[in-house]
Amino acid sequence: MSFTATSSILARSLGLYSSSSTSVRALSTCSTASNLPRTTKLSVGGRAQHLLPSSLRSSSFLPASSSTTFTSSSRLSLSPSHRSYSSTPSLRSSKRISSTSDLSIEPIFLPPHSSSSKSSHSLHLKIDSPSYGIEQTLFSARWLRDSDVSPVSVSQDTGQKRHRSSDVDDEIALRAGGSSESWEVIYPGGVEGVEEPTLRIDWEGSGMRSTGLVADKKRDPSSSSFIPLSLLARQSKLNPLSESYPALPPVIPWTTKTLLESKSLFLHYDDFLSKDSSLHDALTQLRTYGLVFLKGVPSEETSHDKCELRKLAGRIGEIRNTFYGEVWDVKALGRKSRNVAYTNVDLGLHMDLLYFENPPRFQFLHSLRSLAKGGNSYFVDSYRAATTLLHSSRPTFDYLTRAPIPYHYRSLSPPHCLSHSHPLISLSPFPPHQITHLNYSPPFQAPLDAKDSDRMMDAMREFEAELEKEEGRFELKLEKGDAVIFDNRRVLHARREFEETEGMEGEERWLKGCYVDGDAGWDRWRSLEVRKAREGVELD
Image (cartoon, rainbow, N blue to C red; front, side, top):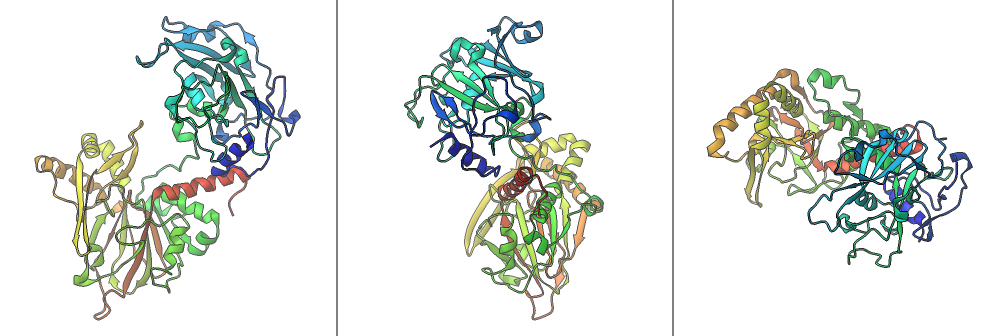
């Protein structure tokens, strides 16, 4: 199995390209993209292998021109401007720099990060290349070895990592005594699917500790790592992990006025079903505003197995099954109701299934019948309320990100007993700690902690004052053939009381619903973005 196998598997997993035979040769002399051989090989640990393409590539970090000339590695004197890392007593430098175009590399030795380390020092490489967006960043040699994308580290059969990060040796060392001959830029060009320069680093030995979990125990006495320069560029940024894949569209808190100004609030179902451009618009709208409506959805088939909702939701992702089923009906059942949603009374703002540890992200509701008097639906953006609270009452905001609110659901027939607590405002655990979702569902709220109840009630009152502002409420009646998709972790939904004709209870207002998890939707959006970038054309 060649390097090509690994490259194809990983690139196909991101939808970057489809190729059965691609390879390039390591450059040791001046070259440009235009004069590269089209089918050659490079040496990896003494074996002829193909170079893995840019499975982690981000085109935004590529240089403006693709005709950059790369020279062979050469030793240069360490100028004062390159001594910034070696000016303190705790750092030692080899005082060698390799320059390829404007890329410079300098080995640096730091004290070990952990007292348990076997080594007296920790090897790092200071890498700088303005044209590739690498901003004088210090990379641990262990990280560089761990980030190798060659067949030594990535399975050629599955495209998956073959070692644990902790398997990298503390005493990892560069080959050739750490001279500039230990690294080189490989410049792919003129070969399908290989579209970016990659840094090759040669190690003394495998660079790995002996471990039973490493798939290939018979390693070469020396090995090389291959790291795309775009990965190094991403890692030199403040938030590198967020740029590994296409970044989701920004979230925009909305009022009714700004929501109505969005271009994709209402879409036609036929376009949504048949055109990827319309699907992309719907997913972008869902991310940005958390709410999108589809018009003209067929409503004749009402069974769970054959309903149009399955096709609609499947366009975005796999339907999530719950104890309500994959799909379910929302209609007045009178005394048979096991949920306030299955009545005709006013149902206030809430989110679904907060008694789950991981409630579903997307909720779908398709209107099959709309003859009842009343029953308008309305929606409110909880993000807007939370961000307003952040600026107007920071102590209350902070409290609502920490204090738990319990939710529960109990049923004797069929038997269910679910309970989970969430803070009202959930933040990402990593800086900059942005709002990820909210948790608000009064109908299913369990008793508050008695010791902290007054403070919680006061804080919730401040939050609810923002929710109740008329400017933030979007209200309409779902007519037959309308469908709404909304972010259940962001957009609160509610329903006005309604009346049905006597003898027609449960038949004049009838919705069919289902859930899809957020990962499925964002996967679909990113895949469409990658396809746009790969083909260089707009979606059909």
